Length: 350
Ligand code: ATP
Image (cartoon, rainbow, N blue to C red; front, side, top):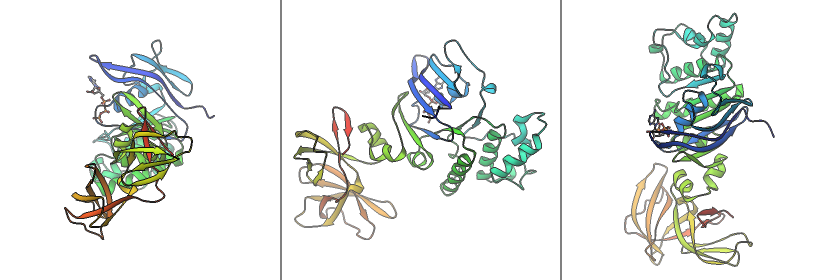
């Protein structure tokens, strides 16, 4: 097992009796992008600030490269932690050109100009050395902030909502480019975001936060397809929980059956988790549901349907079949999709 570069052990931080971060543990390896994902106020930025040493913790320990940097007895100041940070607003020095912004942290380093040149090259900024920040596009400003954070060869890169100032189209390309740069350098990175899409695109590992704690740490694939709780399942995307029963290695729902592990015991009342893309919808006068709401999403529609039992569900439908409200339909589980279900407040995946 590789040794983590960043290790947080049960760290806590309160502000005025409000537990901003509560016994949180996580670790990040060299070259890994760890995304802290959660809604506003769940403690993401506070966690990042504790790792950076911009705040001190109340409890727990933080190690960087096996060195204790924060605990009840240790506090290494931020400038000695070998950390590079990029903030939401980039915080570029407006009176300095690109070259001077990037070289700022290098002070009188003898290799200053070589390091600035190399960093500008790796962040695709060569040629823009003499531009002032106001002469740069949003994407270029973001890269200058990244270059400044990387110029001192830090061991750890901390990114706080680094793409939120960019418009949607630019954000997509800047994300990809930033990921490529981070992977090229191979640095332990923590990125904070409230965007599920961004987390899925950027992360090697995602930590989903809720009220100061991490609810689940896993790969993007598993966070989306194998959430451990109803909270993570709902947070990662639209889903419905419908009454079902398990018997003979199958889970039986109102919209069809799917196999579960034969080890799973037979249970009469379980809640199955179904995502809109797990289902098929077709017009049928003798079907099991009717359309009560529809939302156009461009490439597809999300239909809200009322099943005969009174259960409401969301179904993804192709834009080719534009179904009308009150249309009678048949909704069925698509073959090949596995169905998860709740057991003792934990989601079980087949
Ligand atoms: P956002 O996505 O909105 O930035 P966040 O997940 O980053 O939110 P934090 O900024 O870490 O959340 O805040 C966590 C909690 O701690 C919030 O309730 C916030 O109001 C509180 N908090 C953060 N910093 C301070 C502070 N310096 N003084 C008092 N309360 C604070």
